[in-house]
Length: 433
Image (cartoon, rainbow, N blue to C red; front, side, top):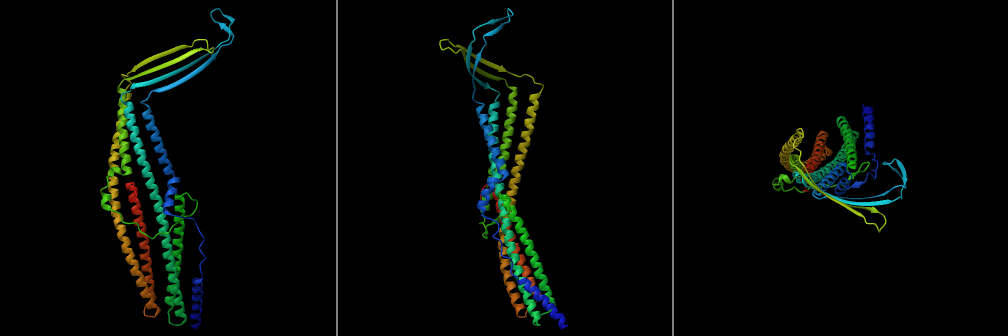
């Protein structure tokens, strides 16, 4: 019996010694980035931002082109012609010799469509609406990018805090294992307490490894968000953003949010395309002018001036119902766009209301979790003191440790939920909170 106890004590001593082996010093590790720098980098390199910027540039170019349709088109040209001395006379069928000469010509022409059935005005209105939609789309892309960065950043911070929680719990389990081993050697403990402490320490080590793996994954995700091939460490920040004025948020004009603004602009553009398609029922009227000079190179020779004016009228009376098909197609697109804009307005309104509620709940949960951590810390201290002086059981210490660990995890998750809810609400509103 004494041999068994001695052998078991030897095993516990070995386990305790292994548990006390200092961990390898942490690597200088991945580069560190602040939240502001992470957002700035993401806005520069994320493909969604390049797409939004490209859409805005294309829309502005389309608006410029629509404005240019109200101006006349101008063109200028010139040419030179030289004939050979040997020529063929088609009238006589003979080859004749004539002096070689060179002639020059220059021209200037202008064209202007006076009336196009209001197509230009409708196209200009559609281009303006498209530019507005692209601007709203850029705002949406910007805040969605910021949201993605914040989620990755806060996740990295949360996982880092969870690693710290796991480290504290592993250290506490290691301490309890050492105490149990010492009490067993002194004959003041029981083997069940030692076995329980060893199992608790093993579980704590597994939890620490899992938390570290999650942290590594979160840092790699953050690195991808900011354009770095590899893990990136978020700057530790335990502060909680101030709770915003939810009354002002609820009073926000829904039409000013980027998603609704883009949908409304697209609906307006679709309505303008309907007007443009109806322009084919009207006649078109245009005018053109050209002026040119032609003559030899000798300065003593007079150049011949040729000019012309041209007025044109075109009215398509019947085109096989092609106009009707175009108007119907444009009207269907307009109706769909109007329906989608109305649904987007309702969806954003509901999302804002839900997010405000989630934000308030998360903020309250943070306060409750902080109180639970304080209570769990005190309960663990009391349980450890009782066990140390033989007035308590190890299972009480383990229960208190488990409760504190869960309270700390809940606090980390509550902070993450609050920060994420605030970022999501800012993305919906299209403004910083």
